[in-house]
Image 1: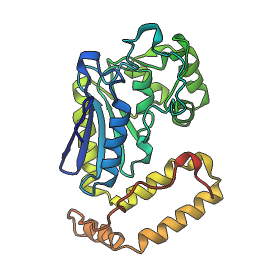
Image 2: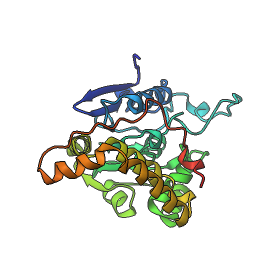
Image 3: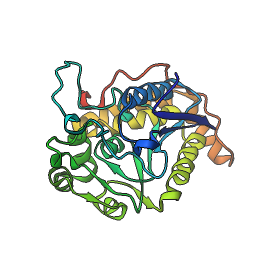
Length: 274
């Protein structure tokens, strides 16, 4: 597919998806949601891709919704297909690790999209926040589900209900991201981490662990135990379980043979059952 608002490159097991509307500071628009969904599906189904990095064309990540429509930006939508999800396929549905390399400002939907990723690395000098309550609307892209599970109820309430912005250092203190770095170091660090996963982590193991990790709030401890046990039976029955130990003992790179089935997982983490 030819994209108009994103760039996609695959190199050595790592897919890098770049939000690319530099003339609008990578504002969310121009079909970006549909293009991201297509790219996520492609990464999920491509066995060459072992990890995904989501970033933005410098110097920003995404400044939020495209406000070029002025006062009509958030006009009522009569289209029954309208969804506040922003992207039809969420990053948590991709069965590979997805790392947000937030190399600059991430505001509104630019910020809430990062919350759907597995790992976030933020630029120290960036500006972050979900200011929608200051625009007459509210947070989107599942942020009322993702943010509390990432930072807890109290910090989520402060971010969502005040609409204030903050820098990368405070984002780290709030628990939003795992690392904060100078802006020009964010993408290299994310790619390095993604490549480490691509080289050393078994694809089937990553997919199974990610599925369960995103389900934890909906399952009891007993349900988690049953699911972990079932997944262990699947993984231990594959030759990769032997290969991983032998590669470690022989001090060599593992040669994984397990491949994720060529389809998106039918599971939706928000609807995970027993």
